[in-house]
Image (cartoon, rainbow, N blue to C red):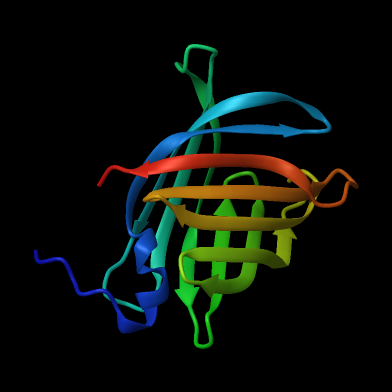
Amino acid sequence: MEEPEVHPDLEQIAFLLGRWEGAGVGGYPTIESFNFGQEIEFTHNGKPFLSYVSRTWLLDDDGNRVKPLATESGYWRSLPDRQIEVVLSHPTGIVEIYVGEVVFHKIELQTDVVARTASAREYAAGHRLYGLVNGNLMWAYEMAAGGRPLTDHMSAELKKVA
C-alpha cells in the first residue's frame, strides 16, 4: 500500500514525522536523578493529525536497558495561526490535553486539561518544549505533581532513525 500524502494542515509540524531514538536525563524533588532511553514515533494516515507513541526505559551507567519506564500515546493536531492541540493518554490513568504554538521548528505546549482516574497519582499540569536542533529532536518537560509547582522533570535529545 502506498504511503498517503501528508495532509496540508500538518505542514508546520511535518518535521516531527518518523521514528526518533536517543537518551535523556530525568529527576524530580521526590525522586533520584536517572538516565533514560527513549523511542518516539510520529506517523500519519493522510488525515489532519499525527499519531504519536513514546516509550522510555531506565538506563544503567553503561547505557544498558534496565527496565521499562513511562509510555504515552496520542494525537497532534495543527491548527491555523501556528496553534497546536495535543491529546495524550497514559496507561497510569492520566489523560492530558495540551495547547500551544509552533514557531518554525519549535513547539511549546502547556496543559489545558488534565483528567485522572481515581487510582492515578496526583498530577496537576505539564509544560513541554520540542525543537529541531541540528537535525535532532530536543525536548524538555516540566510537571506539577504532588502539590509542587511546574518543576523540571525530563529532557532528551533524539536522532531520527526512520
